[in-house]
Every structure is written in C-alpha cells, then in structure tokens.
Amino acid sequence: MTRLTVGDRFVVRPGEKIATDGTVVEGDSAVDASMLTGESVPVDVTVGDTVTGATVNAGGRLVVEATRVGADTQLARMAQLVEAAQNGKAEVQRLADRISGVFVPVVLLIALGTFGVWLAVTDDTVAAFTAAVAVLIIACPCALGLATPTALMVGTGRGAQLGILIKGPEVLESTRRVDTVVLDKTGTVTTGRMTLQEVYVAEGAAEKEVLRLAGALEHASEHPIARAITAGAQERAGALPAPERFENVPGLGVRGRVEGHEVLVGRLPEVALPEGLARAKATAEAEGRTAVVVSRDGVALGVLTVADAIKETSAEAVRELRALGLTPVLLTGDNRAVAESVARAVGIDEVIAEVLPQDKVAVVERLRGQGRTVAMVGDGVNDAAALATADLGLAMGTGTDAAIEASDLTLVRGDLRVAADAIRLSRRTLSTIKGNLVWAFGYNVAALPLAAAGLLNPMIAGAAMAFSSVFVVTNSLRLRTFS
Image (tube, rainbow, N blue to C red; front, side, top):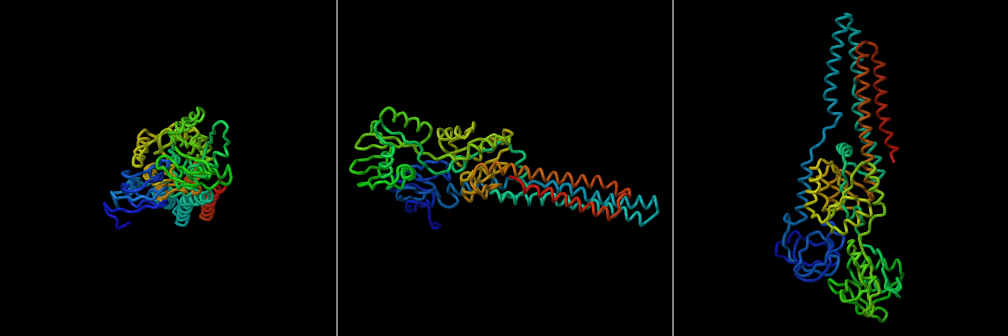
C-alpha cells in the first residue's frame, strides 16, 4: 500500500478495506462508506464509479485504479482538519492557579506587616514572630492546592467506573456552558448495522414462507442488506432451505430456484405489486428505509424493509439530554428522509442531513457563530474534525480511534445515555471543585484577621489548616456516590 502511486491498479476482495482513493475499472460490488460519510446503506459501485480509501468492500471483487495517494486522499485531508481544529483550541487556565498566583504573595506581605505592627506596638519580638508565623500557617494554601486535583481524581475515577473517560480538567468547564448537543446518526443514535424491520405479505401468503424464500437466496449473497435479511429470516422463520442456480444481478438483487420455484429478491421493477404491497413499499422508501420485493414464479409474495436500527436507549438518552437543558440536533451525511425518520423516532426536532464529512466542521462552527455552546457526539472518522472543533467532543468508545483521539470525553459502552451521565458527572465535578475553592479561600480569608490579631497561636492555626484540607478531601470523596 505504501508503494501505490497514481495510476496503479489493485484488487479489493470482499470484506477488505479499499487501499486508497480510486476509480473502479473492473467488477461490481457494494461499498460500506458509513465511517466516512455516515450513510447507513452501502453504495452500489460498478465500472467508472469512484471509491474512497479506508471504506469497506462489502460485496464482490473489485479492481480499482488509484487516483489519489498519501496526503492527497480524502481520509488524509480529514486528518488534517482534525489536527487544525485541535490546535485551534485554547487551553483553559485553571482557577486555582489564578487564585494562588495572587493569594500567596499577598499572604507573605500580610505576615511581614503583622510582624512589623506587633513589633512596633508591643516591642515584643517573640509575640510579633508568633503572630506572623500563625498568619503563614493559617494561610497555607494546602486546601487550595487540593481543591482541584482531589475532586478531579475522584470524578474521573467514578467516571471510569461508569464507562466515561475524561481527558482533562478543561473539559469540565465546557460542560457547564453547553446548551446544544449535536448527535451523529450512524453508530451513535443508530446501531450502524442494517437489520430487517417490517415484513408485508400479499393476500394468501404466509410471513414465514416469504422469509424462508428470501432468506434462502440472500444467504448466498455477501451484500449487507442480504445479510440483514438472512439474519432476520433465521430468527423469525428458523432453518433456511438451500437455493439452486443462484445468480447475483448487480443493482437489482438476486435470483435462483428454491424448493422447485423460481424466486427473485430485490428491487424487481418488472414485478407487478398488489395495491397493499405497493403502498407499503412507497411508504418505506419515503421514510428512508430500503424496500425489498420477494416474488415466486413471477408473483409478488411480499415486501421486506431493511434499515439501520435505532438503538433502544436513544430516545431515552435524548429525553435526558433535554432535561439537562440541552437542545439536540441530528447531524448526518445520510439522506434527509432517513434522517427525519430517525429524528421523529427519538424525539429530535432539528435535523441537518446530507452533510459531507468536511462540511460537518462548518456546521459546528455555524452553530457556535449563532452564540451556542456546542457539544458533539460521534463515532466515525467523518466526525473527528467536528468533535475537535466543538466546545465539547464526546466519542462513542465503540467508534474509530480517530474520533476517540479528537474528543474530550469517551463513552466506553457506546450507549448514548452515557452522554447525559458524562455531562452530569462533569458538571457535578466542576461544582465540587468550585465548592472546595470557595471553602479553602473563604476559610483563609476569615481566619487571617484572627491570626494577625494574635487570637490564634501557631498550634491552633496548624490544626485549623489540617481540618480545612480534610474537609476538602472529604467533600471531593462525595463524588464516589454519583450515579
């Protein structure tokens, strides 16, 4: 692959990744480009069609002529977008560092002032030194230094137990301001796998019989839609008969003999459909699902619909995100009919569909330009640049390494509900950090006048300082109960 140059031809077998961008010069197949484009249905390709490197050949054998290699490929350009977006993110200066940078010099001046005033008023060097030491001890910023790391350590540890990996403290500040969450469709809201959905049968036909015939033929095909039908047929109808004279018709479907009958499964425009099946097929296609016709001896028996299944937890996850005050937006490279169908099913009102991978960054930037603070949830290479550009990037742990690397939070389980948990935990951790800082700073400010006035000796000041540190640690440990 490293030796490929423009104009070279290479073979891509079923199941293999395409080595680089190119044009098909021999063969027919279906190419799964979901990780790059977000389109859930594999795209049929034939001679003359362009293919993209890193996509998967899901069907037959292809011979491809390379048109772009190395840094010129679409995948490489997307990686450059990710790098640019990551470099453009300014690091957040920690609040504790800012406070300590001012607080410590001020305390030293107060201690010197205390020593000078006591010495001038009492002419007692021991009393002046004792008061100055008490000021230094009571103001020792131990609790201030523990406020952030202890809460962060406990919060990230609890997150890891829940399947949430937090990359750094700056992530926490982003979660507080987020008001919009952009959700990738394929692999995030949906499973990213084609599955058999509805089965519509003609009058007098039995559902199990239609599934047995369709499954028998599709079992011999390598197409992802065929695999979905086969799996669904085996689950619902049991064992499948063996087909004879199997033939794959590119772009249309498959045909063969099953139990002595001529069976066709696919688009089959030449087969007349009864009114009920025609209506079911039209409705399915209008909603973005793939409709497959099954016929026996030239007579239509049924229509099967196949689609990228929505995860069972997605609708609940969207409700939880709304409860956190976030506005969900569905963003996908898939067609609008599919996107709107999925959005309706999970309760999302705003849909942005048919977006090219390189344009997802522009969509996130446009939303930010409207004054929104944007979180992005995705799993594919096509989401990586948008994850890096968003104010908060959340990657599904079941997705690609590129998406995980570009994100701020990783959701190990791939369950969208964890996105809501991640935001709640991050906000709770940030709240704990700020509570610790308020206590530590407030305690020091309140106790300093007492020490300067000579009302606290160094031993009592030391005990109070230790109590302040213990309080901060104990407060941070409360994050272990987060659920």
